[in-house]
Image (cartoon, rainbow over all chains, first blue to last red):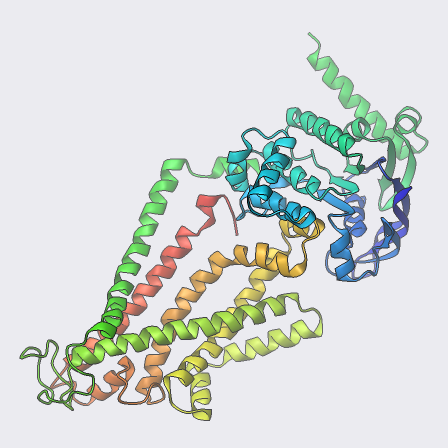
Length: 266
Length: 290
């Protein structure tokens, strides 16, 4: 069953310059699609367009159907219902994506309360449970902390917990590991992988890093200058890239990898 | 926040010293304001004389049963100052409440308005701000009647334009933040986003501005009363006390000095509070930058 169907999506700035052109892709329920491309290729705009959250002045044409709801042109009320329930997002920079003046626990409790209707002590217990599920040590302490009082990796786990608290059918991860240390990155990827598998969620994983995307997704869509240049299974794209751009992408990922191998060799 | 910011941030002890020095401003402000507030509070429980008791000698100097002397009608000056403190606080709190209520509402609306509505609202606010507060207040008082209520309403409305413009800018800035987008992606409705994320994040800046507006409102009310447009006699607004004592300043200076000094103490007090609040609520200690 198709969960997300993007067809002919074009996003334009206020002066009519297209940033995303005629983009089409689908994500089935439980499927994992990687959206890959360099910065400025329109990946992040695509994720925002999927939730009807384009920045002021930008307009989208085409069709975005998320869990049966046409997002483009939908009324605010419909959109609010769809967001969180059908899709939730983990952003790149967890420090700015969390409210600096709100305790971390409340930021997870908010969406949790909206979905479950829990209150008081039971909501608190559910919040601590949600924090524990993303492997945060000492959830009691973390829940009381403000975002700046915990580490970057912990913040991103909180952001993940807040997104998962919505139990969305589709988790959109927009460069969720880019702002993290390499060692924390691997843990984060593993965590997303496990939690999403347990919940049988679909994932739209956005990244500029082919190696990262290849680890957690089944299929890859390569974007360049707002257009899809190549689409296929991870294996196809990595082993036999058809486009020049993708070949360069794969080659540079390989170069980096072998450089790392050389350095780590004794 | 980038790693360089963390490096550039002063070490813990320095931050501690800073906040202590800064909260000293807040404490001093609270003490000054508190002294005047005490006068107002005590006035409800006890007054040296009844406000309309004219039994004292005319323009008597300090002492002889009247701590600060009497006015030209023989009323006790301390009694007048104490009831005047009520009026000063009433005017300040009342005006700021009006300014906060109207200003925040208008400001949030203006921040969300788009296109011509935003332009119209902004232009309207700019025009309103271009008028001096006192002139606007005089217009309102002239249209209604010279009561404390009119003065408070007039000052509050004039100030709400300033508050609204500030709130509009603050809200617009907060709305561009990632955590607002993040809250929206998880299905938070606009009203909840504003109440839960936008208002708390503009609050530190707003509360400092409201404290400043309080001081300005007290001054504005005193000015209106001085002009005879504030609380009507026999209410002893400090502004009216000043005006009445003006003619006899050379023979009985206490009548003008005392309300003048109280006015200065209160206004300096709330300004120090505003200053102290700005530093205490400042992001530095909480890892937040605005």
